[in-house]
Image (cartoon, rainbow, N blue to C red; front, top):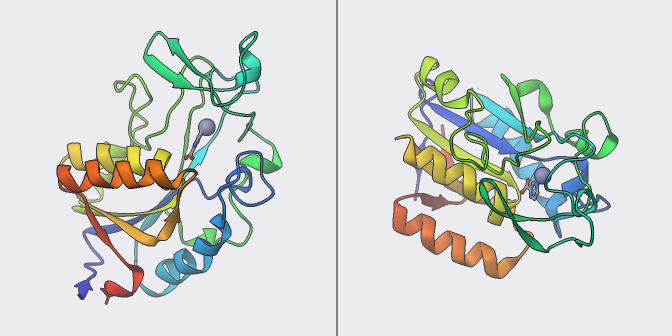
Amino acid sequence: MVLHINPQTDILAVIDVQNDFLPGGALEVKDGDQIIPVINHLLSHRFQRSFATQDWHPENHISFAKSHPNAKPYDVITVPYGQQTLWPVHAVQGTWGAELSSKLQQQYFLEVFPKGKSENIDSYSAFFENDKETSTGLVNWLKELKIQRIFFTGLAEDICVASSAKDAFKNNFETYIIQDATKPVKKDDAKKRKEELLELGVKYINSHDLAL
Ligand code: VGL
Ligand code: ZN
């Protein structure tokens, strides 16, 4: 399969390629670093337009197990906007763990969108916080750029990449996930999310399917 990139209407999305989600980080994704050269190649030799997202939490964020008495990481609790999985402390604003990887060619990003900034709400999606209402401003920004297709890469495949792709599709963008440019926290969850997303109409491709 060959898919030609339209430099005017296509954009590359690089989700949460941050130290805490890479090997050695607080919430590391196994082999997460292997996607960085693939993303760098897409940034430097394929796409004209790209943006990144950055998980950017306050110290006492609602998604941290330590913000709740008696809770431990990976417990699921009920919060006003629904179910919330609790995580180890990660991507704290201003810390090394929150920084985008220094190996990533960040100079290509038109914009970096922070998410999960407020204490009382998490945000897996690049578009909307977990209440499914509070916007990050991304939809309007993409519409102003006249973007039609979004190609997703980054971490983690089963969480923030899947949630972002779902919202992209729901907001009428043609939505692709670049399979060799993403890695999951849990392989089984990634498989389930992939089935759901394929059913919805999201497409999966490999980076070498993309041509100029
Ligand atoms: C993420 C869990 C918690 C992600 C962010 O970027 O996939 N996962 N916060
Ligand atoms: Zn987070």
